[in-house]
Image (tube, rainbow, N blue to C red; front, side, top):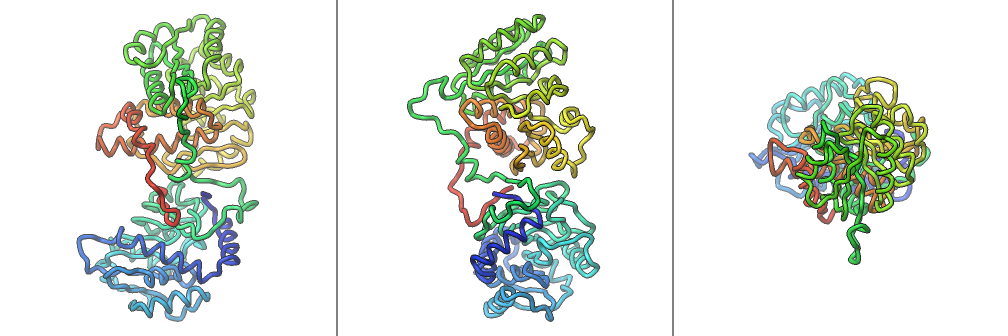
Length: 507
């Protein structure tokens, strides 16, 4: 599913109106919004009205359409400019809402009505929002925030830039947002994500291709159905190596645990045969923890010999995961670059490997390689310094154009990119902010590569799965999630319930 800029959304909407008609689209939007009303309305009282703030445009029409479609028992009240006429679709929605018995009142809203509301629908501006807000809209936003009632934003919360994620002052901080047509890019990017709340999307007949050529490269976001389609299924006739045989070049005397976690991540992701190549000084610690995985040693003091040993192992493996726990010495640098230069196997590089690749990235252009830096590692790789939260997307895109290597930039919204397309990962939790979870992710991606996924598909499916596993682990543990919990949660996190294509939850 595409995450769109404001210009892309306008193109999608215009094409859909041409196919379906504006009235039909708004009715479909209203029906989708109505399905979420009781989910987010206050449960402590059944008397709180559903209060909608309807702007002059079609975002306000969507608010009317939602109240017309709502089949629950709560009162429905809409505040709007009585002089606003708007489009044919908005007029149709307003007429149907009146027939359904809504109470229509003029702006400004009664502060007491907002405080007592069971739910407020924010239908003020939508994708056509511009910052800063005009004084009248800003006053409405301040009234909503002061009320403290739950808010369901339509398309995106008023006060967020739909493309950049910039947040104005004031801005509505929604309990949930339902994107109409396609999710807006600004809802995924900080600081806009904090104001978005839970994010849903009602596709309502939009087609991604209608935005091709506008604000390229495009940005895609994975949902449950797409993740399930990407996840490899083990054939009935599989044997252990054909089920996925990653080679993990990981660990050191100082950091043996990183290799252990990487191996657990690979195994729990479904690898049939995991081999770990590690320095001789780390082998005992690894073998004390790894029972099902094979540990092979090399002499880090003899980089050329180590490269030969590791490359011999690649003859029986389907991918390479390299970097977790590796040292930063020149010898390790020779090993990392010697291994990656000496094989055509797809690979994922993390941690220590990123340190050693930083000055040789040009040699890996268009190779089947995934880089998985966090913000600090990306600053070193790019050579352009610290990455501010609002700069992550443009900085990644510039890096991809320069080096052409699939890159996964870790963060609250992890970004995965190639020069042709950027992917947003919507899953994740602060529980993943603990040592070793990145090592688990490297193991997951190595397994997916060994099972035949392309680098970009392995990276985006791996990030999505890793985030879901973090959520599962947090649900079980509540506090104190550790990296092994995330690896152990991968099985449960891979189960995708049947999804409803008419209303998709993204985060």
